[in-house]
Length: 313
Length: 299
Image (cartoon, rainbow over all chains, first blue to last red):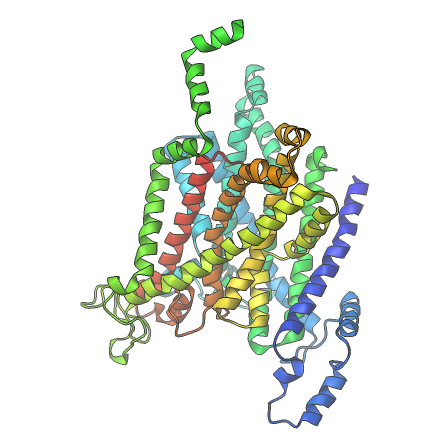
């Protein structure tokens, strides 16, 4: 088991190196360099060139890449062009805010998804199955940024029950007012994981229920609750893998929902960085989000291997 | 001898054998014909496609001609039955014209990713060895990004526009298609009939064409159709963020963003582009489910 974990961790190294190369290449593929973005066109060429020298932009690309990678490794993400604050400070604050959204959204989406999927499978062919399956397919087909707008229109504008925008104040929710800010974005974000997990759980449970060992368990006189336990245990590994992926999507893909709700998270930060052409913030955000996604995938693999020894190949 | 006699005597088995005699695609078509939901969904998508492509036949107003005098008219306004948008342009016209770009940006990336990713995946799965390792390790790097993050990173850095949207989404969907194609091909490659073909002296290209392709294309195609619904939502999402199609083009995500401020004045009108994204994406999801069942594919 330890060997498996170590192997997975080691394999992450080349993947992350590839990620950093890709991000670096993308940024340097964009037309114009950083100085063109920062300096107005009427500024004399000598000043622009001296700036290029100062930022080491006149050096070979691979030299620039190695220097950038070296700084990333020691946690030095540079300074924001726009605010002048260290990128690490801005990024980790924003990531914390995204986590405040993503965690409850994941818990809500996964619990609902498992419940709906398992109930649909156990009531296979009945109207309950049809209702829950329809809910799941609607969940995966809805553009969630649109759902956010509709929820704001209903609950903030018409009913005036919940705040439409923002986080209240940053940090962990401590008061009822703070929690109120969470409700709409969390519900919006939980829709996709709910639909995706529910569809997988339904398919998995149906398949397991059709297998011979379930009949044997019934024949042995086990209560249906024990059978349910065995079914869920068999359905768990693949559901777990999907949940890990979905959690990664919630963290990395929250940009749309964060934009709708003006949430000061990592997605919102990335959106700002794109429009301000704030290259240090943008590159650091992409690399860190991808690194988190890789780590989540490793955790999922290890957990899966713990649950199902066949995975430890 | 006795076995075949009992088999022939059993009508259920005889029927099954007769059915097995039919070609695969004939059985797929028979199953599809029974599936009312999938047929209805395909009809809806077909209708949508016709209305979008021949938009001038179904509209009377210019989708780009606005007037300050008739801004944000509600649904049911005489002459503008779906109302007007924030600069007074007819919403029905914009919805139909907007469907052109939305459908293009939703379908083209999956199609391109299917061509590129399918080719690389099948090649990697069939060749195995070093080529497989090279393709799959590169895929792992792209896989380290959640697809929306990769698409946003690419359009964010290269700039907005339809071309960059299609490019970004194509790159985002190549890795999952490579993975599926590679795994399906590897499975088929190790089946007995491929071994038999090889042992009987069939050439590599022949094996690839007759034995591998015919068995892997179904699952890969079904998987790709399931990506279209995600791609439509993401493409509209990029425009919604201002990273996709640029104004004044009509596109559902962009319209949704522009109408956001109008949600207080005319909530139904502001919600309509989102309804179109939802209906289209759901139709593609249901179609993909129907195809998966009809083609008896498990992924």
